[in-house]
Length: 386
Image 1 (cartoon, rainbow, N blue to C red):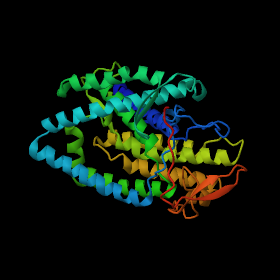
Image 2: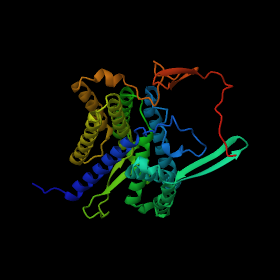
Image 3: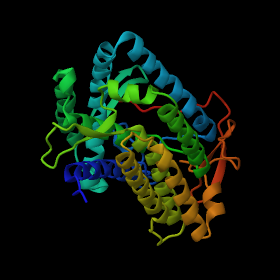
Image 4: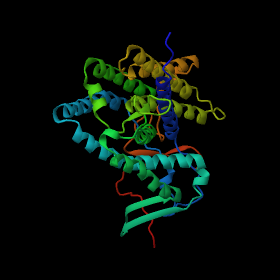
């Protein structure tokens, strides 16, 4: 019996760790930021708004989920046509510059978020806030508010993109690629939020067939993946010594971000359960889906290694994530509650849709009151510097 190829095993393990850590951190980044009560403190012009990380009201709905495979197919085939008929050199150059510029903002935001998590929210609020405000009469044109650590991190966020853009196209550093790719993944999972498990299952099911068709049915996916040298993939060298002679194992960011949004949804559901049931801080849905993702990725790598052919990762990851959620819900007797749960950043109408003629706000006694906002003449006044 041949001895194991430990170089290859270490490469698979490294790639697995990168993907799992990215999902773990991104999922926690999708949780709503804790808010301090401000009932007794009136807001001033200089009160912090930038680093509150207000919950984004929009969620990816089931209608949006149906369009993902279609939009993905159009984009994928478009890149395939460009590579095949016009060559890959110029598009690699163009996309490398695009992702380098985008990478500055992505790495900066990820570094800021991780730093805030490490130092703690309350301690973060104690750092000096620096604000640039541009007014034209009573109107606020530009408002930028940054904590001191955020400003300090900006030059550091420039380094990966600058080095990546200046490196030769044929010798892009795997380390720089991974830094940029991990930041893109972290921000995508944190910001791209599904509104329900139903939407998540629609998304994963649609991309399940999308991946199978474009990998097994055509050479489109393989051609694009091997032609584009841009930071939309995770790389790990096939060597215990991190040498690059044998090449790298590769995992596309889509195989991290798409299942990652489902895992993040499971964590937000656990968070909602813990909020509604005080004292409950367990995360069964999060851990079940995360373990299922790891198991699905291990299965993908095993099949790929045994058959010596690239595999559509979502072929294994999509069923693993969906079945784990359904399984844990049935075991806990909560399937109906979990399936019908809607992840909304604010209270809405009974149908889950925000009414145009009214909004909901909390009364002082904790009850919910309706406030008519239909009149266009009522506008929120802004304070300005005297």
